[in-house]
Each structure stands twice: as C-alpha cells, then as structure tokens.
Length: 118
Length: 114
Image 1 (cartoon, chains in turn red, cyan):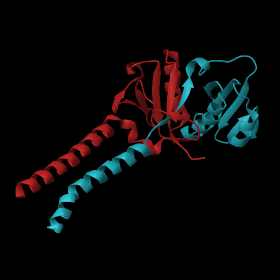
Image 2 (cartoon, helix red, strand yellow; image 1 turned 90 degrees about the vertical axis):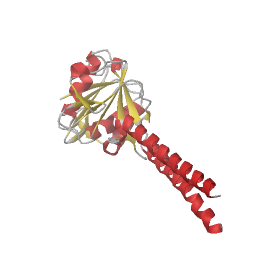
Image 3 (cartoon, helix red, strand yellow; image 1 turned 180 degrees about the vertical axis):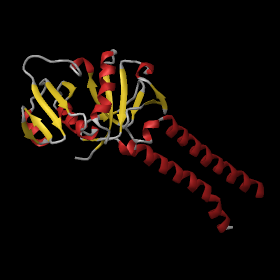
Image 4 (cartoon, one colour; image 1 turned 120 degrees about the horizontal axis):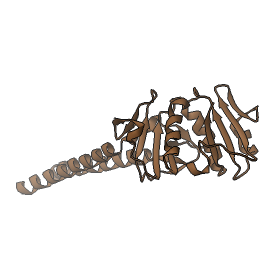
C-alpha cells in the first residue's frame, strides 16, 4: 500500500516537472513571446505563422535574430521575414530595415502586432 | 483513509493547473501579423493615380488635409494604390494603425520616410 502511494506521487510530480520544462522550452524557443506586450496593436491582421526568420529591432536600431545581435548583412534572407519592434520605436529606426529587405528580394514582410479589440 | 486520498490528488491538481496556466499564457500571446507585400510597391516609386497620405507628429494628412482614421477608411477605395510618407519621429504604433486601415481595404502601399 505504501509502495503504491509513493509511485503515484512521484509520477505525478514528474509529469508536472516535465510539463513545466516543456512550456519553458517553448517560451525560450519563441523569443517574440517575451516582447509581446510591447508590440503595436492592430485591429487588422492575421495569425502569424512564422515560416522564415523573425527579426527584432530595438529603439536604437540594433538588430537581433534569436536574441543575438546581428548586422543587416548577416540577415538570413528568405521570401518571408517577420519583423517586430516596440510600439514606441521611431519609424526612422525601422524604415532602413524594411528598405533593406525590399531591396534584397524579400517578397513578404510580416509586421508582428498584437490584436486589438475593436 | 479518506484524508490520504485527498493528499494523493494534489500532484494531479498541480499538473492540471500548470497545463491551464501555460495554455492561457500561450493563447493570449499568439502573434498576429500585418503582411506587407514588397512587390506591391513598398519602398519604390509609384506613378499614375495614387492617393497620397502623410503621417507626421501633427497627425494624418490626406492630400494635405488633416483627417482621422475613420475618415481615412471612408476615403479609401479597395485596391487603390497609396503613397504613405511618414515622418521619422512617428512611433511605430501610429504607422501600424494606418497600415491596418490600408490592409483592411487591400491597398498596396508605397511606404516612404519624410
């Protein structure tokens, strides 16, 4: 009887621990989730299925790919690229990136936003 | 005996609450995107009948006349080509708000900086 109880308790705590690990890994693997609260709001937009890379540009114009700082020349170019930035970032900081992507055969730029309730 | 049973259910409660917590977290943090087609004229010069919009720190202007987002919605025709000139200091949120309206009307945008 005692053995049964021990087995049950340990297996459930293992499940809880594995769940916690699983979701933490998901969160870490999708860095844009961390900055989600600062994304600009939009009444329009569709659920983003990010196929290519997602680039983050901060207010100073520093570019990040998966939390690693990169230069424009290091951007892994693909047809679709997601771009996200803080809602307070000035346009003059983001525009050079948009222009660079356009000039380098990126056909679709996914501007990540937070959906606003109308 | 009954008390023991209650103690035995606690880990499963924790597991259940964990699932709920993270599911809620993930659902509320799903990303949405505004897709901008670069072939539609983004960053390039458009010629012909186009609608000129200017977004500055003073507000949104259509053909040099100040408007709000509701007016903009009524002014735009579906599929119309539009030049959106934005002042450098304008916050990204304001640009996205205007792009949202244009996106709703399936308008191709030529995005430029002032």
